[in-house]
Length: 404
Image (cartoon, rainbow, N blue to C red; front, side):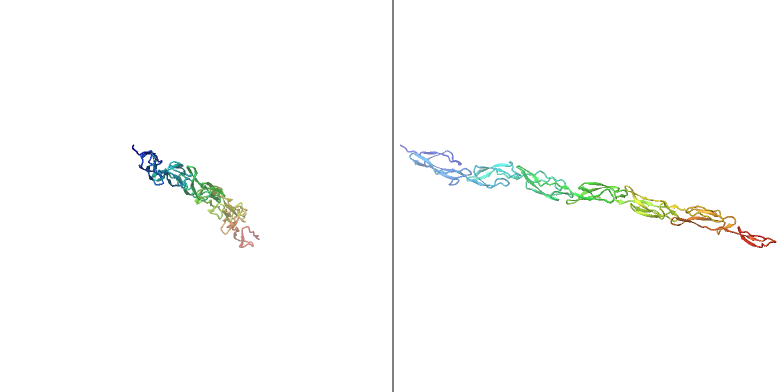
């Protein structure tokens, strides 16, 4: 009778290269744990088919290949920090708001064997910041600016504009919901007010306005600007959070035309709106207001002024002229009038039988005759009457003599 070796039962070691391995008594087999697994003896161990009882053999030193641990898993900007796991375990990663991965806002990482006794996490993605929409703030230096979650940008309002936080403010790309980010603290750059606008001698008094507002200024009658009777002022940015009026002109008085009043001291007198001038009539002349009157350069229309209260200096009358022994008796005349006086027969003046008198100004509002002479009697020839008492008697016109 022959004694033969017996077989050990088929050997399977989970998570190894050994599956349904057979062997005879005293046979050995090296078991190699799968990647990511290990036994108490290491990544491999030897089993032996040994007799266990009469006619029966079994495998000895049969160890277990157990899963090894992956390194602690941390993914920035996610809910995963120092997460542990063993081979074949998986972990769901959720990116925090405002971040996403190439697979979306969540993904699954698995602990997989990479070598004998070694495991590592697979499908380890990055949670990257999400882009905010392009940022444009009207009336600022910020137009179509790009930014990702947690990025910041300093916005400077244009001159003449400001925000509720001042001339500058910081906008931040902030997570809004899962997978989306928006700009926070994105303020408006609003117009600022110009100081009240007042232009003397115009229709503009304490006019309010904000950046880019315009106002049409109309100069008062009798005034004008370098741009004409009207001009437009604009509320323009002049500095950070500051606006001021530009094209602010002055409404200046216009000149009245040169003034000449005949027979007075006023000849081609100039003057501006609201100016006054005292006119004095020449001697021998007078106005309805007297020997003097005041004229004023007054507003007449936009950009136009004229002299008002302009009177005439008119001639005054000389006293009635009477020259005894002449043809002139209560003769009337006005300043600068002249008159020829003719002495009666038998009378003569120093200038002869006739002379010219002129009505001349003698003072303010007064005239008198100049060149007035007297018509004196001329002498008769000596009178001698023979056989009388009259011998060489002298006499003048209208004289009488009694002859005896």
